[in-house]
Image (cartoon, rainbow, N blue to C red):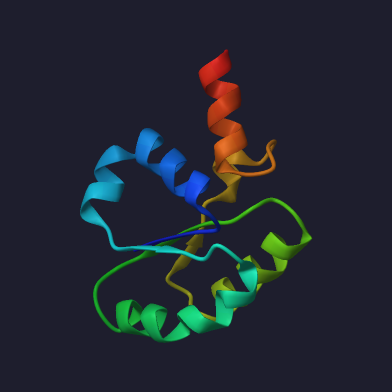
Length: 99
């Protein structure tokens, strides 16, 4: 399972990890206020078989939401290290693509 903050992040995951997007269920939050609304979905996967990859923004709201999910669900894996020098995954992709 993949959780992203917005559609552009989803597109970025699709470009960078094509196989991941074709083989995973995906949740696009569109607004971090919905973070608690995904708990039922995350619980379903936690009780199943899957790791949950989390691609949220590198800002205070992203920090808070990431901390919330990773503390509540140990199988949630914060992916922000892969784009730590950028605001979000899309900005990282634009930078890498422009190099």
